[in-house]
Length: 346
Image 1 (cartoon, rainbow, N blue to C red):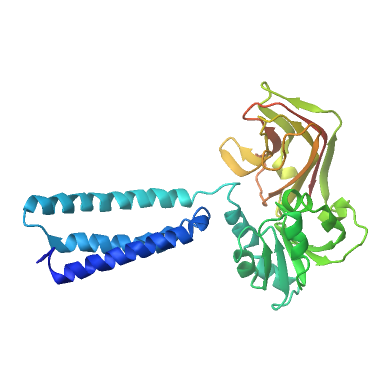
Image 2 (spheres, rainbow, N blue to C red):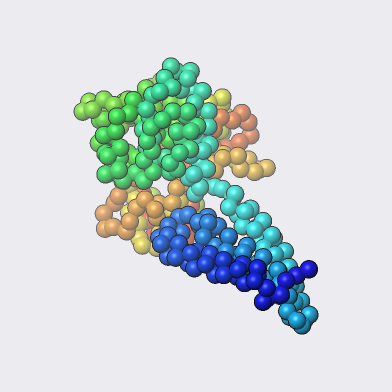
């Protein structure tokens, strides 16, 4: 039997709910700056209070039945609605794409523990992960201890290189755009010694003369294709799709991942936000798609800016698929491209 609102037990529950509510509000303001990046903190702060409130409302009854129904029916309705909204939100949370760097990092480092074992890296080796984008996942998947640098500014990279690590791990898909582009001096500080296709491993060798290509591991034995565009490319309202490369995927992709390094210079207007995209597709659908938004990597300037991006295309065996690299000018803004170079290598 439901208790009266005046019952002492109900009053105590309401007092407890009020205390919890005040605590939730205080916690909310203390953690306010953290909520944009950690929305799940809402569960910690308000969920217990909401549960207590529901229990309080359901535990007592008014003398008039219509008041009881006016509380119970809306509560049941909103409870049912919350389940459907939660399902929708969870489905969106698990959506992923080239923008989801946490998921990209998880996929990239999957299997690296076995690979490091196979090349003789000790279990107690300390690893510095540049461009980790998530603090723990790379180290857990490598089954090693170390440090992760999640925001690869020049200062953060140089600070990371002062750690007492044994080797450095860098994701191949971000090594050009997010590491070398931000700290070009790293080319003379690290030497590549291993690469499983998705992650490259380096050892510290400071102040040694090393070319850009040597750092990436590009030489005559690894190059599959290279091309330089001799002419400038201009884009505007009539250029939505600018193709840099298109060929049969089977000529370059087989049982191992391949890397596509694209470098050049861009001069763009404020409204131009082209995306450099790599894809492997056929009529039935797209197998691989990855895109870099140049709006995130360049600024409006009166002089051209250098850019460098690298795609990592997983292994594939299908002779009907096409490998493409292109600029997608979906906003049809004005920009020009110069000194474009493209290298496909293993």
